[in-house]
Image 1 (cartoon, rainbow, N blue to C red):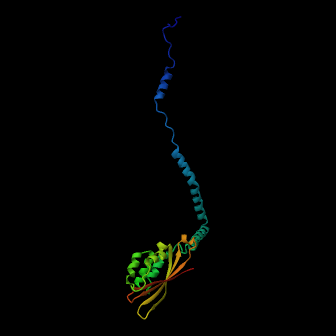
Image 2 (cartoon, rainbow, N blue to C red):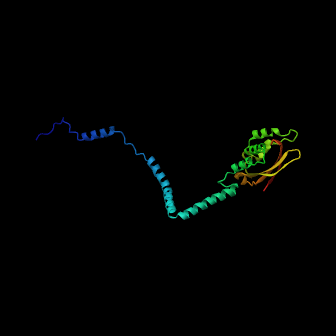
Length: 224
């Protein structure tokens, strides 16, 4: 029996294992899985799913109950109309601004200068008002145009012109035409909430035969 020489080293049994550990150490570390976008997608789905499901069942119900759905829509529109009317004093499907402008422009008894002055007052156009007032008799008391603008124009006074009416017109012996114009105004919704009321302002215009304004007076304002 031959025994190994004392100078010979035993065979290293861990050689393959050390080689595998060395190879694994040279590999890059694994990248952790990113779950942010996936989690956000799940949150969005969780939010939208009940909404889409509700819309689906509403559409199915409308298809199955068309008459009841029509009545419900009409009631909804009526409630919107009534709420807008009682809060703002005007219907949501009508344009008071256009109707007031047309009532002024289409009145054949008002001269062009009176029409231009009223529209300029409503719109807050100081330059147009001053330009029209150049024909006023200098011997009469000049109108306080800037104050009128602050008190009665829509953009400055937070009011809404709802109606313009020619209440009286007559020709004086000297040839001047005296016109009395009433302007109905309602406050804006924010002012109404503070207790604002409807106002009717009366204006007096004296115009010469050519339609130029000879005299302009603020007569009165009453609330209701």
